[in-house]
Length: 475
Image 1 (tube, rainbow, N blue to C red):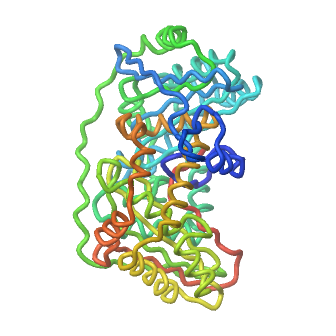
Image 2 (image 1 turned 90 degrees about the vertical axis):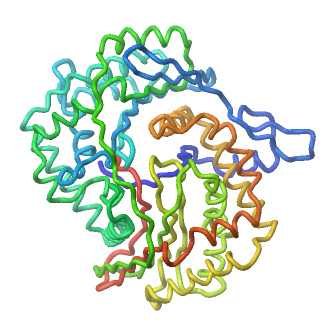
Image 3 (image 1 turned 60 degrees about the horizontal axis):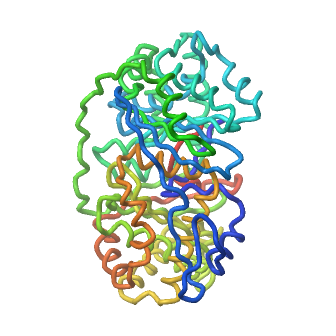
């Protein structure tokens, strides 16, 4: 199954958002939020700290002992994604991810799902711009199964020619189903227009012609070039004994030799100097306008201010966009946005609005522009600023409520080589963002010369499009 899901700093796993909101608003002792002596203000911190072990072959193991978790997540993160692909070979990271489920001599095609399902577990994988990850969620006493599976397919993938063709057809069908959707086509066009030379120009799933022409030899060479212990991080979260786990990982992975990683210098995206536009005309019921601005990643001192700015502008029904476009000037049925600092290279800060049937993309853009001008000129109220910070930190708590969510957090950090200080200082840095910071970063990055605008003009009546945010491709 192929899905497009949002890529964000923390991945929401829990569905108990109301519970966690109450936890942050009226805290009680918990691993991630404990009361302070200052009234009802919570002291939010990391619930559990990771321990890291490095093996001689370059493999990194990140361990988080959570004795209260009923399950264990075992995740393998490879530092290879669509940003590593060469011209003419886009989509090969995702294609290779599919092939990782097609069998080895030890685990023939179809056996992985059978084995994991047989112990009541789950397994899947996803490809992103910067990484490819594989995971198994199992009972703690079944950890031997993911250890055996992942160590075997790190080096012993068969890549049967018949399976290559079978998966090619599946990937092409995914491409047609997801990216022929009008909203996905709009996202694809905006990214391709905003990036002129950097690989973020390309969709993670790849361009159709490249998928059609990728050969078994191409996949084999790509697999051998990137799937090796010195390009991987294993993340394990759950009830574990660290020394015992280190011994087990060494017994399964320690004999796999390190490889020689390709040294490819990625082209730096040149600064954008003028407004860019792209137009999509496809059957749809509702018009959509998407506006994207180049923005820095986690390395910038502006990253946390941009995180808060995104929440202020588009964080739910109290946000500036929603209040303006749905309530005060009703031209849209939805208005949201996103900014993700956890990318290997600078990404995009974007908004979108799904219009009423009586609206059109230029009208939506006019209202989006009005909100941007407002935040550049007018100081954000203390109430909105503080509620936006609370929402961000609520999500921080939510993402530590599950072993899988915590594993995702540390896996993305390792894949993008983000220092631990980014996470340990996250709460403080969010809390330190001021209204002046928001005005400053809005003026710095939300400029028309740094902007790419995408319009979706409906050409017929079909099902209402739902905007799926750009992000990883899940098997």
